[in-house]
Amino acid sequence: MMSALAKEKMFLALKKRGSVCSPNNHESQQKEGRWRSKHSVSTVSHVDEPSPRDEASRLTVRMENTYQLGPTRHFPVAAVNHILKDVLTAYLQEAEYDPEFCRQMTKTVSEVIKAKVKELMIPRYKLIVTVYIGQQDGQSILISSRCLWNPKSDTVSSYALRNSTLFALANVYAVYFE
Amino acid sequence: MEVYHRPCDEGGFNAEEAHNVVKECVDAVLGGEDYNHNNINQWTASIVEQSLAHLVKMGKAYKYIVTCAVAQRSAYGFHTASSCFWDTTSDGTCTVRWENRTMNCIVNVFAIAIVL
Image (cartoon, rainbow over all chains, first blue to last red; front, side, top):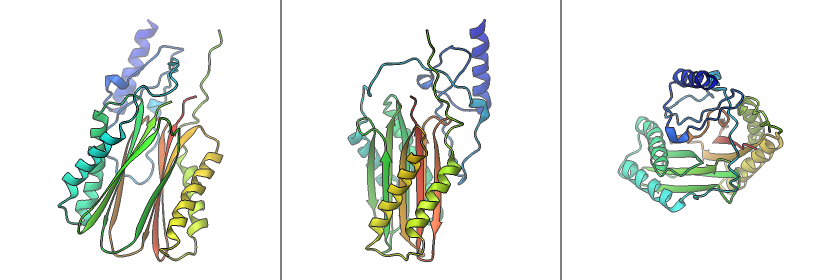
């Protein structure tokens, strides 16, 4: 009886959020009625300010211990490098710099890269994809990043592309979910 | 048998606090400086390292990724976008934009929760 009620609560919460929940990512444990669902939400959000916290999803679940010390499958940096190279050259090699076009392109390219890396289906890895596109004409720019993480399991992959009018840089950070 | 209670996340990532911390770091490093090609390497490095140090001092159980882009202020356009695949209840991001007469600076902070 408890399980049916709890399951209903979960479905309601999911409906409210309006998100697509893929079965692989969904883990639930029935313990004292506290839940958390891990969603893969594909929304393109253009807001500059952080979006308000969604209270409906404030349900946490206590996961059972996997006794796993590290990832079973490491993040394939080389494969991701190829993906970045392919996507950037396909979208931007022949492109001319145009403000509206590039504004749309940065968002599109980052979504496409995220989707392709997700297709690799590396379990328990969270992804952050950042894309920088700028007009190239002699001005100077420097982009750097530092990360505080576990170097044995987490990694970054990067690719930069230049053509006559623009430059583009894409980074993928992969963080193991501990 | 004792049940292990997870430490509470305190409502996920506190973007405002991180925003303030990072803004202070950028002000400290770049405030009053003009764009200088020789120093820019050093400046980005110290912005990022100081931000990371301050974020860690906040004492939360997070992994941090801090990126910084400094560009000479000119008529040229620049766009940046990011998309993330993570747990939206516990992880978060924050962006700080800073500018002065000669340069623009954008700092992104991504925080991913560690479940202890």
